[in-house]
Image (cartoon, rainbow, N blue to C red; front, side, top):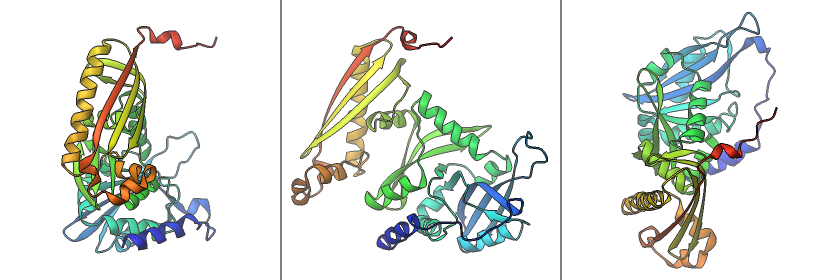
Length: 327
């Protein structure tokens, strides 16, 4: 199955969706899709941009949903509700449930690879709640994508994953992460969902997601133990089973506390998932790339890894001195 998916993915990269001409006014432009799986049936939700009378009118969407024994059947049942041709090339976001990840992930991947109407650059997120509530509130793909972007830049609790990255990770390393949302009164960030071997594995809380982003060099700004982190750079090097992690941060106060507590928290996260046999940072692949001879002769590399973390904080009390205001 994995080999077939890889072949389909390669074919998709060299195909184009411009196979036929349709008047723009006849297109139902889909901005967001949701997929669930319950009681042996797929449930597909589609958020389709509604017509605007004037260009200055706010963009609005209308939600459709349908069920089917297969994804294709569910999509067909959405098509018959709409008087326009469903246009998928401008889709910005795919939202999937845990049921899909646990039971039908390979089926979903195959669907997107064999349908050349999609582009691979749409974002993908997991949701902890029922999709019906999300789409009935007409929350847009733009709102969710902005929520993820802002939280990546300002809190470090998440980051965006596009479908191509998701696909590459799961095919090569057999594990990946998805930013996760939940819906109560409003949509909010809920850390990451970990996927291993085409099934959900565990979830990372928002605090754990920050630590994961530290290790992945994905922190732009965050807060740790009440200490503001303005900038951060993480470098990981491997030598056989030795993993050297160097973190350089610009912070506002208490460098000793920051150094001590961050190192302890990162080591705890790494060793916890090492014991759970989940390669959180895809270190086996790094060793494969950097030291193939060691990789080839060593079994169960993950359990043999030794972590050394060095943290170098620099205190900058008045960080606004760096800001240049153009007059």
